[in-house]
Image (tube, rainbow, N blue to C red):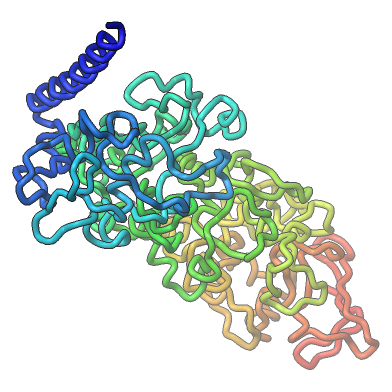
Length: 583
């Protein structure tokens, strides 16, 4: 009798479970954005292009009341036999990502493209689909719904998201805050259905919530300063080349987004949650620079930075261009490279201007090297960013001009312990510089970009972008600077020097009585005598270009300062021998 009661109870439980499913189905059918009206309705009357030949049962493709395969909740679709998915990995990832499990395995039973869409446990034969379709159509690389078995370009799933992970990665929010639409599974793991609700497509792409402004992303990702960055505030419309890579939102969300503005898409401007072009950091495009230049080409961003990279002298972002890796040696990475994110943090950058004591908001948050040679993050001064590659790096390259005192480490060139230096870190040692053009004073500080800048930048009088992206003048100079002798003097020939130093004063010999003779009559370049960065063992930036200046007949090559505006030279220049020639 007891056995009979138990059997009846069990049957009643099954009937109750089945009734719950049908009641759920009825409720969903009354909702315009339910599975009934979505592409997950694979029945013959479904709204998508993939549908069954005759089947009219909506739920059967995933669920069954009887003869489920043992997976929760009453799972009907036959599981994939794949046991060796290529999972997401990254040098910055702190989570341990295993093989897909839980609800993610259920999703992949269709979306890895290895199992027939109509292959269900409750039927002895697979449900027939129209147009010869069996598995998820298309190749993984061309159909975003077919994820394939290589998940390395997809947002990680099936990993434990707990307080221990947040302690390792502070850029994540505490999972205790996941009390809304975004939820972990019962084991505390992130799964496909943490972000996707397969029964409800009201937000498009089956998202659990509206992702306008990346509201879904920031539930987990802690980026407190991103909200004030241009990438979170811009009302510009995303270019078609990027928009075409986006999963379509629901119509009402698309209308609210105001035609895919940068602010509305936020993270989606650059990142792809599935089938990323550059996998490690889930970037849309494989070439690192294209993730930036697709917008910073004058069509979306106001300034056309892309045009600068087409010039003769550039920061070579397309050569040896692995992605910037936050964990790599910032001074001597395994492969020397320069990418946009070496200098700019797109999550932290802002529009604040640089001041004498603070760095530009465009460089906010990036790593650099201090004047003392230590790693610093974030940089406090622009030169600290430049020092990262142009100071102690073993692959920094040769000097442009052949010098008497050879030094290519810019950190050492600008050292305030030198006998002379351009005032990058501190005011210069010379308090009397009559050639300076207002507002420059002897106590003024300069920035690297006062000299190294786009030739079309606002600082050069143009309408382009500021910054050492590219210039027609090598090496990345804002204005022309002739480094060859035997060229006629003109405002253009030494335009870079004349930006700060009055040409009239220089040619009037106000600081050196032979300036005019050397520059105008003898056709000597400024760089033949002066090294603009700094010189450890000589005053007044004197560091002779040994292509033109050689030792005198007595074997010496020397400049000696003998007081304000006075000194003597021992050398041979342009065939003339000088033995302590005074001025």
